[in-house]
Image (cartoon, rainbow, N blue to C red; front, side, top):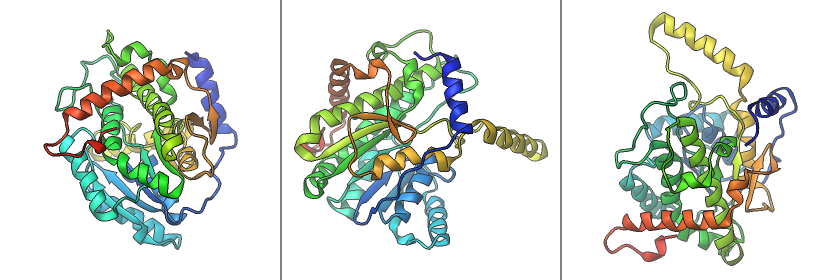
Length: 336
């Protein structure tokens, strides 16, 4: 695990040095899903860029999809891009019916056309109080694991037939998983056995390690046969809704909010810079799949993530869970 000092030094370099950007690509005719795209988020900025480059983009949020769509469309109009390229839909990755309903809605409206799935949505709870009792989802899972990893796995499994068909027809389909450098806090043992004592940062890192395993296993299983590639990435430490703390209301809250925003701008990347590696992985031709990206280039993830046996075991266990969710009369081809 890299030392805290080396991580801090690397982050400072990102802030003070030149921030790499993704080279503009023609995304015309490409259909993209970006999860977790509320305003001022990485997903929002990613969707805005890809739509302005010609992609047809579906964005998701757990609430207020109409507001998200209105904001994106307004931003696209301001830069002279086609606002009709963006559609918004509600999606709660912790809710089985929501995931299944979204997949059904997408097929109904877009058929088999899906070239890029960007699993960006995520949570990081109890940032300042990491040793509190583990927060759980409604169905009893630790919340980081359920949202950041299991929800993404479930959604991908429901959309896999579309991705495979699009890969065969176009020669290029992708699953892009937004991970984090904090994945190196976790060990593979934690993927299969609960570890004590609980720490929310470790739980977050574990979910992000699982996403890297997920990407590498997609690449091994589907790249050669279906032209379906996958990559995981670290976007940087970014000033988004995920990193903002709740503040009290009223005038005092307003003061704290302004101070917090000013401090965040000094120590965190902007969403514009943070989105660049996501955009690159979604658009670069050709993309080298089965890799971990950082600062718009290939980087080296933790050694734990390169354990193919752990990747396969995690895949099989996750797939078994998804199969327990299969609806009566469902199509087995919808399973990964």
